[in-house]
Length: 89
Image (cartoon, rainbow, N blue to C red; front, side, top):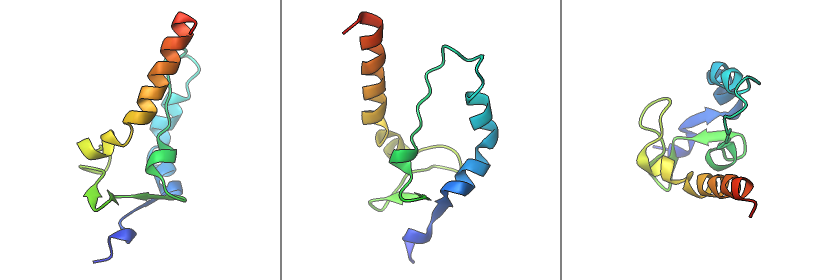
């Protein structure tokens, strides 16, 4: 089986998550820090289901522990930046 074909296009992802994207773009959510994992989960316009032969998702919308672990560096950097903003690093 060719596992490279398992996934969804970036356009398909945007359509699938349109309601969530709209909610997150609401300007009334001023205190919400938004992070976009697209650059980590998307590879040239394609959201693969597997990375290194390991599943990224446990269902159609939720990451596995492995998938979430791929986001740790980005989230760590975001938290560091927020901490610096709060403490004037």
